[in-house]
Image 1: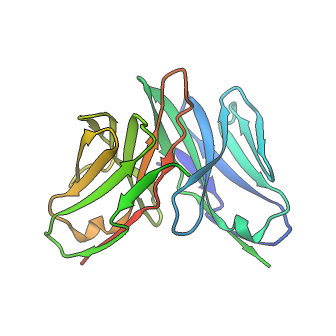
Image 2 (image 1 turned 60 degrees about the horizontal axis):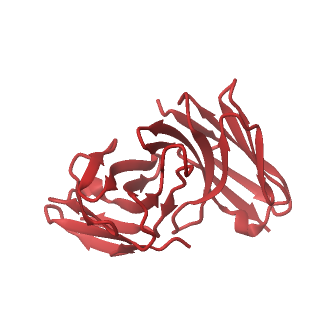
Length: 114
Length: 116
């Protein structure tokens, strides 16, 4: 069983609408949780980072929340744009020695239609 | 954009042939990683390096080897390519200092490998 589960697997919305992506994890304890955005044919790029003590973090129209008790995180996208069409990946990092070992979810594919 | 260059970006090869993918960074980051990305699996770690000549296995290391003779270069080698190794390969770098940097990964643009 994957330690980081994301839902939905795919999502189609209309431009201007809001949406929320979910991430459930079993990795514990962890150092931090990141959401990455991956455009088609490109490498992933970090959107937000939260430590286990943080509840919410915003980056423009992207807001990530974290509930360490239920081991859930969500990424809320406000007023979606066509450029938001991408895969969104939840990554939980474990500290291991002097490094961080990231565990990746399988991603949610978001398509924004005009 | 982080200075990460992967080469080649696209390659088609035949089963049984050796293949080497190169990752070059200009950021002087200590940690380098090789991932593969396949539909339905997401990104999976093949090998990583925490310094020159220091490497370790990831979750899908079978059939792959790596080398890091310089800080800036991390090579991924498939000694005898198989069709199951058809994938998109991503190199990533990070600082990942304990108690310091938060371990953000910076990814290259990917190398698409097709094994016929």
